[in-house]
Length: 407
Ligand code: BEZ
Ligand code: FE
Image (cartoon, rainbow, N blue to C red; front, top):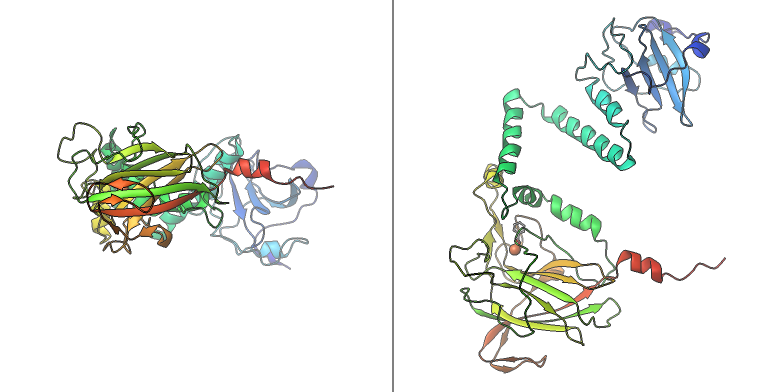
């Protein structure tokens, strides 16, 4: 002893029966954490001015001790003086509730940097949906942690708000600045990775990007989809199959790419009277597709808005290496969103959206006029890009196919 006395607290077993007040009933409380089990031991400011500590166990708050008035500051030693409490429970920050705080019911007041985070977390813990509770709690914890780490001035915080405001204002029907922000901060690739933990031989995924158009024109196999775009002729030949090698007939193959100057049809300076460098095909009975177009070029993502300003401040260039986009779908399969990158591009190692994977980098081959090795036909010499795509089975389909467990 006596740390409890030293801290101005007293055990008061007699109050156990009278004051089994849980955090759900009292808004102003401070969490004490121990390394293994945070929230196990919390301190509650009761409306009548007493401080009470409870230990959450088995879903119930066990009363531990109470004191009439809060100490001006404390060292957490009280915890060690109470049987059953984790020894040396670390105290995160000072307990800052001023004497006379005494708020009950739904009152929410008198916050400072030591208790504001827990107060907000307590509020969002009351959300009905468990996913909302989880996401909101995580958002508050991480957002507050950023602010504690960088300690912005009011002016800096104002700039941050203004940046997000401009990001929203830059969005139009054809421009999505928030996706660009997510892309350039690597978040799109992280979400993609988390959602595509695919079997080994399935084709790897990468970002969708903002230039996908849902209503791309349907084309027949072998069509030229360049429609007047500038650039060197390109032949694309591919197949689509399952991970066991069986071909997928009737798969939809959406493709889109820039022209030889790095412009997509939807952003180029020339009016092409409609969409170009994009199309939707269907694989034939052997899972094959092919089309003609032009060789795309590396290009800068739209950098005349807030995301471009951010890149400049961060000392980064806005370029993506040359690539052809694909979105390939078939019933019972995970839709594949990916690109084929052209080998040798100067930006392969510094893609501004972090989208490059080794397995997606391919060399252009030289194809002379006449019949190709895959049985197609071109009337002039052309570059050729050949790739065989492998789709993973949809996760639910995998489960349905799982062998029944004996027993
Ligand atoms: C694209 O490849 O089209 C793209 C991807 C992410 C951001 C900007 C463009
Ligand atoms: Fe692209």
